[in-house]
Structure formats: structure tokens, C-alpha cells
Amino acid sequence: MASMCQGMMKKRHSRLVLLIPGLFFILLGIVILAEPKVLVWMVAAFVIGLGFLFLMMGNFIHRMGH
Image 1: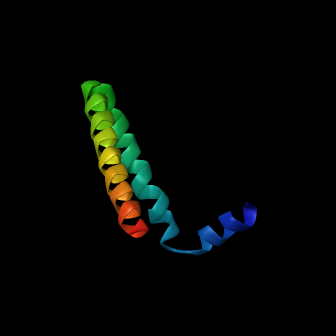
Image 2 (image 1 turned 60 degrees about the horizontal axis):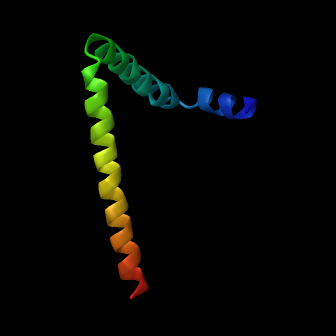
């Protein structure tokens, strides 16, 4: 694990790979604290999206069988 961290420190873009999601999650946490109802909408959107993905995957598997 230490060697992986050293490899990431040598790459210039690895800082942005961690910085951007970190800032996103901090802002998301602030939005959820300010308006907790947002969390319900986010979970609902995630579940709906996951449902669509499962339907697409099932359709793809069905077509592969024929």
C-alpha cells in the first residue's frame, strides 16, 4: 500500500483525482446539512437510476441468450 501511495505522489494528476471528489463531497455534505430533504431526493434518484440499469442489463442478457 505504501508503494501505491508513493506512486500516486509522483504523478501530477493524482492530486486532482483526490481533490475534486473531496471538494464535491464536502459541498454535498453542506447541502445535506442545510436542507436534509435533498438526501431523500438523491437516494430516490439513485434507486431509480439503479432500476434502469438493472432493466438494461436484463435486456442485454436476454438478447445475448438468443
